[in-house]
Image (cartoon, rainbow, N blue to C red; front, side, top):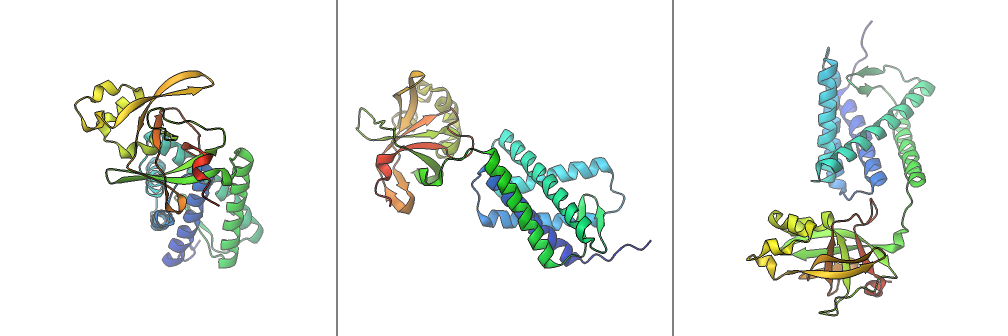
Length: 289
């Protein structure tokens, strides 16, 4: 039986388009920060990877290793450098979304019966109209977003603000939850305190002091420039009194480039799994309409 003709430009463009929406779905489902440039570049690699369909008699073990490696690379490019556990989680979710999309596309294929379908090495190619491809991909994306909405208990977007923290030429962007009940201030300076999750701002600090920050053992960083910049800050919570590392950032900006003078308190505990990585006082954002 003759194999259908595969047009390489169509193959790559179809898989680029689909990979982009799969990565976008992963981003939205996990509430990961990323840029569209990263997603497009990663999707382009996914499109090129689809050429593996031309490789005949590829051993199943080698195919599975290759698929896992490519998925990991796509996730790494799309969502940046993270801990291995996070990258593993992101890759796993990316795989699950791929399965959901594959099932949806199989239903489309079954209903519309496109001519000349080829399935090989985990890659699907078939002649399908651009309208059906775009429509089915967007429908699958909307279904995934609906599942995300049902599975996650979201914080209202008007209670989350993006803040920028800069120190020694390094800059991080963090989503902060606007807490109307947060009145925490530094007793030494009188400045408001913004609580930040360590893994959200760790890029601001040299790796040699990460352990000191996560264990609150600032005595281990004596005779360093950070000895004078860091101190322990007492805070009260429902669980009782505790001490957390704190520092005064050279620059702290709310969205719309509104600068504020604050103290950053660093916690090693998880503030939120997905939506935000810091807690900020509502008084600090009162200037934003």
